[in-house]
Length: 464
Image 1 (cartoon, helix red, strand yellow):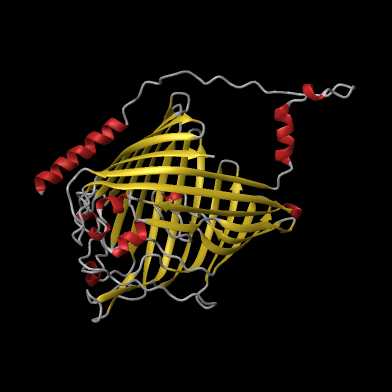
Image 2: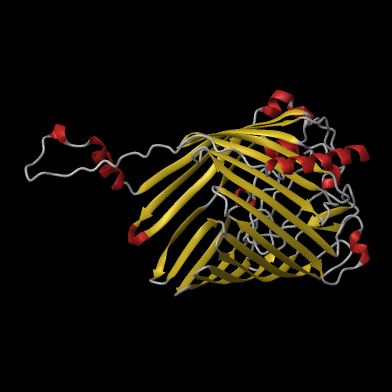
């Protein structure tokens, strides 16, 4: 195991070094299409002189709805032999997902708008490999799914007051990889490390009002729908416990409605936001119960969150920061704890079609107790997350490369995740891509058990 760890450490350093090597720009700029301009003479034109594309455009402009969507085929290959804690074999091809996304937008009277978005996916890999080899929890989560995404009605009540009702995503954070103050929408964590936070957020029913006063805006939000992070289920190779653990959710009621508010200001070269929320913690805590298989079940605590975030730009540099104070946190061995989370980040855009970023977060439990470090909490007084990202576009912006490293702990002692990916635009609407995902074992859960979960991933996406 030590030899494997040292090999993976050397591999991590080599891959990050390769990802940052300068690449040779290939290809030429794409030819720009000429604009087609049309006009009318004083005399009425013959029907054969009319521009058919202009006629089609007139019809489209009169349409009050617009339908967009995409179809994506995504695959994964786990090239290291390994089983899940339930005994399921996770070696070889483990994903052949077919996903259809649809988004229908409406323009309504008085400048109101509505959107209905959702998706459906199905994965035949479990039928191919044999459903009996996988737990019911895995089949329920990964075999097929239908869900609504952002589905809402929005418009203006007054010249400076907007309202938005329905399933939506509200982004408070500034980092693409680490969450500090971005606490309102839960995440889909069923396949850790594969995609960024922006594609992981789950839309939630909210009632939101925004008022605008010059460069400032004030938001008030009520969240009646209670959704929590979707984590790997029992039987997944990312689920490490030897048996399923029951996770309970508070019932939907007026008293359990979540509340949030923010004040934001946008100015030349910088912006700042202040946030407050009364929500349920997306991360559950363990509660003792002898009737359960492992003697515990999971519950969500009601917590207070307050904080601030901001960006500052100077030349080719972007500096960002987030601060959050959380109170009312619950643990198996301790109650009513507080935590201070701080994130500092910097991005550089001085290279052509290239960006580099570094985000560092520290989470400090204010009144830490030694018992909290033991099973099942595994809490730390101070824990760190460090995200390094490199992105670049090549070949007239048709080839897109990304290298991401996420380290847990100052020396990655709690593990690390590395993702290298590339996407190529075959056509404006057709993208093919792929990459590789590495998991480096650490001293603490969950990465202490993910060392064999490395995988190659691929995708083909057509948008319409």
